[in-house]
Length: 247
Ligand SMILES: *Cc1c(COP(=O)(O)O)cnc(C)c1O
Image 1 (cartoon, helix red, strand yellow):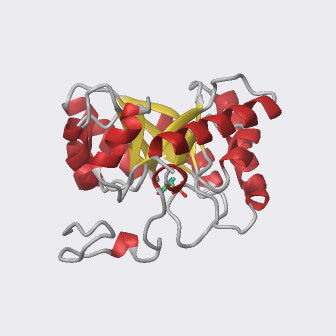
Image 2: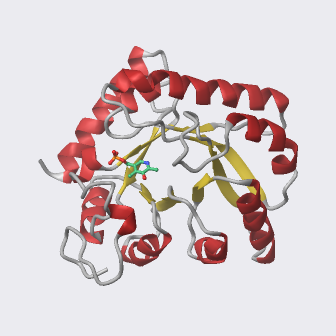
């Protein structure tokens, strides 16, 4: 199937999930996750009307951004090292989704100030308390909330999570519900509206929408399958990716 017809199919399933769960139609935004796929694939998605794109490595985003029309919005969905914050903000990343510590938030705040910008971010929450995963624990986020919300030049727009991998998407439901509840709790504390709840990927986005997601991050269901997640982040310079590009 073409990227355009895959996109149509995903949009239809998003609309169905919105209706089924009493969500406002059109309230869920689709982020097309283009990591590992060439810019030509992103162009196809663009021509099919897609405007929001997500990359998990800054370098790859920097390569693709100039190849797409300027009305695209780019989200960084992978971890951002503090020494790359300046590059990310200068390149026009519109939303840094996976801010996983107060120190990183402080670095973004400081550099955004230097660049006379306000940086939009989401805070990543390790909802399933996985050893291997980045993110604030829910308790850490509660404890550090006052420090986070007082950082200048920062727009904390909401929370994001990547639940532990499960066979049946229904098993991810409690993790999505936990992120929603944490969002409601932090909204009550104020002063931020926290209107973005970034959760749900190709295999579980419908459950995520039922649990309140406002932004689903979908890659393989639009662009096709990627190499195994175990090899992908460790690819070293000199290797080829699955499109045969030299890395
Ligand atoms: C790769 C990735 C996605 C998309 O995953 P698919 O299963 O291909 O939809 C979503 N979110 C993050 C943070 C990712 O790294």
